[in-house]
Length: 579
Ligand code: VG1
Ligand code: CO
Image 1 (cartoon, rainbow, N blue to C red):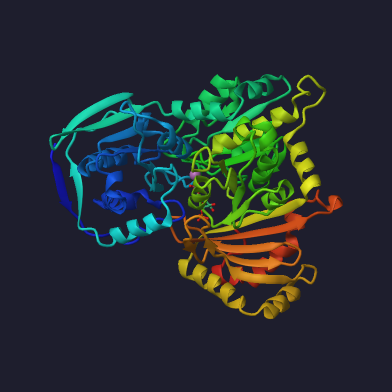
Image 2 (tube, helix red, strand yellow; image 1 turned 180 degrees about the horizontal axis):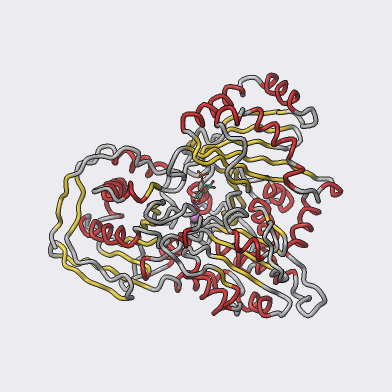
């Protein structure tokens, strides 16, 4: 084929958010829409990462992925890329893409220089739902802001894109297809979606040790992929490698529309799992499993549940960090440091203090962890939004988190598998609270709010921050039993590695007793605005750590809603989702 230049004009709004560009499928399928973004990305990268290089293209398999993959393959050829790697059927979880970029070596001994990941993550899929695309760099992590800013700038000026007319590649079949492009060769290599990732997991965890736990008759297990791409890994890892029963897998067949569901692993959307675990209203009659977990569409998120017990993601990362060295071979030499996103609870901070570990607080989104990891400053990190991970890759990793928890359970039950009763998920969490104190935590999401109203609400919260005494007057007027606000600001981050500064990363109200209120606008939605309100309260007194979280946080919630005039601005009397 010959390289062809196609004329185009810019589209508005192609600004990558917290994790790439996410829009309705109908937006993406407009002529040239995807092409503009892909070309703008190629143009934002250093020339040697494109010309003669190898890139990965795959995703969570959502609706429109197959067409998008063929378009990107042809544009890669047009831009002088030498070879493209595609997971079979176009499927690779986000963490698997990161692993492939970092670990997989081609026949010529070289690796990939980056990846297009086709996913809108936890957003629903299908002809009327969301599609998404993002670019990850050579380290396997999301493009930093310097690149995403450049991509956006390019999208506002684009005049043409490059492509080659080639026959479609059969991505259902493993193997290499070679084309001739402008006299040179261009390869498309379709490979097994799971093998690189499975190999990496086996190098991190002691699979034999976990297998013993899973095969104990006392231990029962359940994993829900919500019809996302995690299903492509769950059977290989949990059933074939670790010996879990096939019946312990729920919704593990990846579907283009996630079976019509919302592939977000939380108590609201993972209904089937929640019921099986004996939580929520419609609980089943059977005795719930000891352990349950779920993943989102692209398998980078995780929800961890015990029998009739929910583990908050903020607690989960803290507990993993506290136990990693003993329970997970990869960390046996110690942790280099830990990090969390700003709105995530301070449970991890307390562990870092106890273990004397380096600690970092970064803005929301995984791209900020990568620099710390590349510099050897951070081993384990997490976000309150059901994201947990480590420096084995540069994305959060849902299945890794499950394996980490299984390792901890196996470790705590090492001498106990034949005993009367297993140490449960709930036991581990309560023991952690008893040692470190408990961070009561909840998040209120107001989805698809009028964008103007959301901005006004945020602006009014910033304005309030100019006078702490006024804030405290208002706060005490709402509830006299909450402590005083000692600091109120907008979170700003200076990257300790490259010195770059990210401003306006969330509005914080910090209280004397360690409580926090945080307000942010989501950067992953595709319609309107989503306001996120994060509420946290620390309790050290062992006699007070066993309360219901919504009850314990009641006074702070009241303060947050009234202080922000939530209902006045948004017209909403209740959040869309509480996690
Ligand atoms: C949300 C979460 C954030 C996460 C991001 C991507 O972003 O809050 O913690 O990193 O989604 O996760 P926002 O800007 O909507 O709050 V995923 O699994 O959607 O790639
Ligand atoms: Co995701």
